[in-house]
Image 1 (cartoon, rainbow, N blue to C red):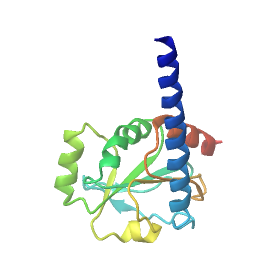
Image 2 (image 1 turned 60 degrees about the horizontal axis):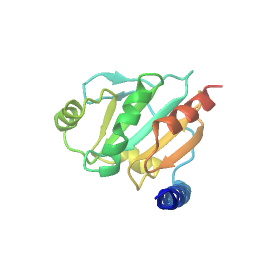
Image 3 (image 1 turned 45 degrees about the vertical axis):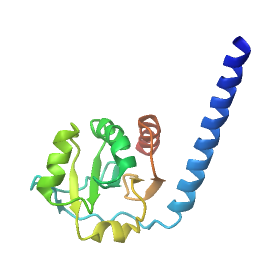
Image 4 (image 1 turned 90 degrees about the horizontal axis):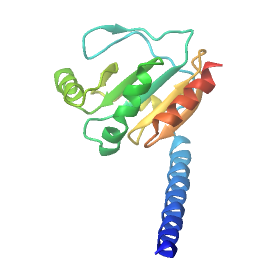
Length: 165
């Protein structure tokens, strides 16, 4: 019995390692297509009709997502969690009206700031083609990290801590 448990544990460990390496490889490949220019986000209207002006003296996590994206749904709590500690702005792409996005946030107990990118202007400018995509900029608006696909809370916190110094 112990032999079987060890065998299954090794198989699970190997599978997890393989998936992690594969996912990171795909992310690195897809991240090459992103616009790596400095951030030029201007004051923008959020879905709650407030005006968001990026802080110029702090790192910023910019998260591009969609309400119809299953991976985005899995990652939403991670983004929500980090938004309580760091400057986070999210961009909802092709997700309906401001009201529909607001309703989605309420249904999922999410409290982060959202820009509705129905015209795809922001996502096209960033050259985002895969959802979710997370971009982390330092206090000088220079892109330091990019992640295409799912990112854990731990990974986000480590990256934000790194750019904070």
